[in-house]
Image (cartoon, rainbow, N blue to C red; front, side):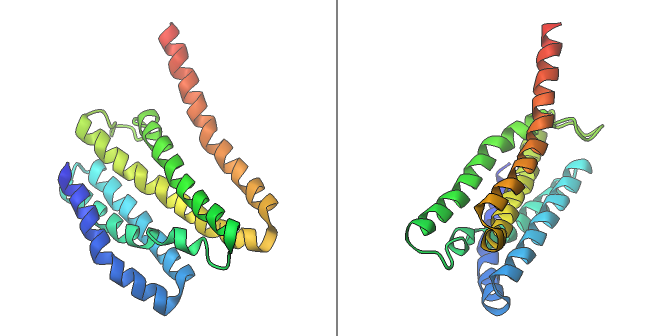
Length: 190
């Protein structure tokens, strides 16, 4: 399973200069949206590789994910644009905290949703690793999009609105996870 990870790193290395050129030419906002689209495409390609049991297609998805990562690398810097002092430190910390939360939540999502696609359970160790990769793309992509869009929401409406927008999304994610954990626990008791 080192080939997909190597291809992700290769995509990151090859995508860094084009990402920087795109940001200089089209601006950060447009480039981040484009990068997010690459991330979604990467997740879809990798998912199709898993469903079709094609390691080659899965590797193509991880390579594309490297291009997406080239855009993601500068989110923490974009979060600080126009901020000074303590606010700048907070912005960087929040972006980094989002990545940390995704790293903790992501593996659990894979475990709890391994049979979400009927007939394509992520049961074996290789499949579980592939599923983890797809899940990471989705989770980190969502964190990246949330970080990007929360900045404009913060600028226009303040922290109160950002917090009100986050809580429904968190509840939407936690509700099925708690339901699944309760269902599993009840099945084990029987």
